[in-house]
Length: 180
Image (cartoon, rainbow, N blue to C red; front, side, top):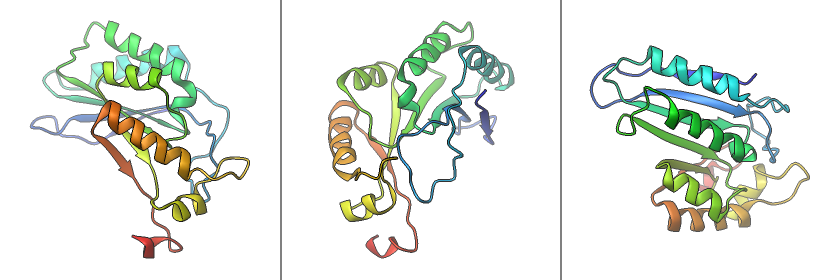
């Protein structure tokens, strides 16, 4: 099964306790600098439920909780994301004022249905985009070698219109940092 990562956080104050659900290690890109070992593993719903139980059991009662969805590409498993969110909302310890959700995506999968779901669950969305098309396409290509800049740019525009604000995560490499 896929893993749950806990990031250090403060038990008090404004900093939330952060947890990351790696829902899949599948990805539709083959980024030359990627550190994720891609494989067909996908988190089971049972593991997701146990992860949520772990989170609520270990987070101090008054702390804020941030649950991030990561991968591979988590939107390859959009139906799983929906089911996990149902488990979360139905969890006896769920409090929407206490729990926030984040999603990090490579920006190649996006639709009105996805936008509506993310908005209805108040997700903070981060799209990975390395910059100008020549920079994006240098390192972030599909598994069959195609450019991604145009697709990701379209996702950024659509996501900003539907979800504003949208965060961007850019990776700079010795071959691309001068474009910064």
